Image: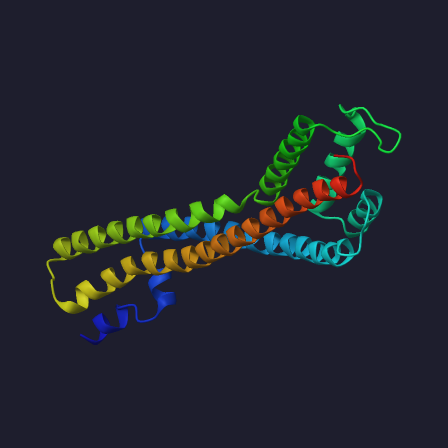
Length: 233
């Protein structure tokens, strides 16, 4: 009886080392997913920190600009997605000939259709910048939703093997059943440790993306407002 009690795993490490092949495969897959998830979380945290810093610097400088030229200088100094948006707007303005002829008092101005085209160009650039920043973020949602299913699969396979072992040994007491069930549940616990950070990171980055997209849309409106102020529209 003493030998039987000593053979029973009593710690998580012992459960892992003495687990079945299917449980080890599931745990190995979860380890890979966890490494991918944390790599994305760390990389995106650094990227969003840089974008947030650039946006804060730009907001402070843009509050003082009066002309498009000053806005271009402020954006170039700050960098970030605002710079790409400003560059796209500048290229559109330079490549587009104002449709409304100028007078002695006024210079040539852009028509309503040209302004609408500029708005569409800015919206397209905003979407492009969001897509660039959101690269790899959907993987967090995938890992967060798939990991529990992989863990559940490992648990089911572990329980099946535990009961098969019990049937083959002809013993159904608690001491024989508990180690197999505990081993099977390790897969579920491991899956939750993978899924929780992934889901948390995805929701956090999704909120930041929505905030950045809103800031870029507001910046597009500010560009058009500057053009109105300069009597280009």
